[in-house]
Image 1 (cartoon, rainbow, N blue to C red):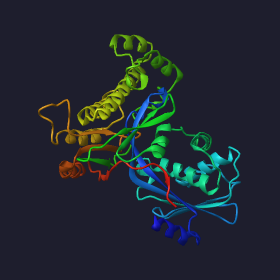
Image 2: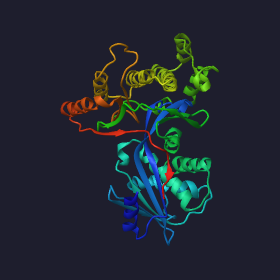
Image 3: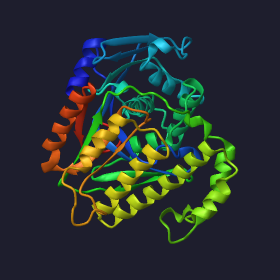
Image 4: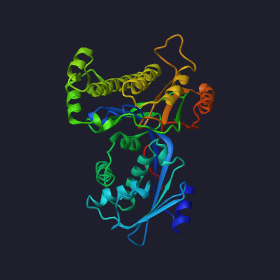
Length: 392
């Protein structure tokens, strides 16, 4: 953190008044189900993003990202989205989120410090937004509580960036903690922490560098008609975690979804399965059964690959090699490791959870991957981390 302060002083001639630290994040299961008010399982990780801020003597806003060696500046009158501003648009959106809500904002200097660039994924862009929102609130003494900060962020995302407001992204960045996963319930717009304490395991995030190539447009299923169909299949059960699950009878499911075109039918059926995998993983974590949790993760990847169709051969190859490392030959239903594509899909990133002793063998598989496919991967061993905090 001292380095962040020194960089801010070197750039602006003054130390920051506030420094906020926000973790990176990845989703384990359910990140494509938010539109249907289902659940998402996520982990905040120790890939920190620091946002340092100080007041200016004028009404301007200056932004500096040292790892990119990139600087931006804007006035309040010129506060609009510009494609060429790239990463700085996320901070501008948070400023807009507060000003559009009636808050008066004075000029500020921002320093964004992250060893992982926003283009890599892993929740870095969300961490920038959350950190900026909390830094603005603290520095400007706005005294907003969490719901008000979330409202400001929603205005910034929806109106300024013209993008979706992904609640699970934001709640994971705010509420994550050590030895925990974050379960977001999109129906109640709330989250809870689930225990994740397996000291013998290592969590590896892998950027395969495989270019994303969209095979189909996810927006085609995010329509009210699709939500109504799935709503008919939601079965309330008091004994089920979260209070409900989708209809389990395949005949009933097919009967309801039969009016949808074949492709949409297939994707909605995948959404149904994904919710069950979230519940299965949740149950495994509550019972301290890594095997049940891992089985749910592996099944979720198969679902993303075969039914939702957002994986790619390169990622599937890595996860196949992972499954061959230290298999549980005595009980294949309770694997010792697991992995899945994560993020937007159609390429790029995955995560693997495996025994520490098996990490060297997994790394050798990544080297083999580079030789076969030509993409030089980058990987990070991570662990669950504390959510957003004001550190100075």
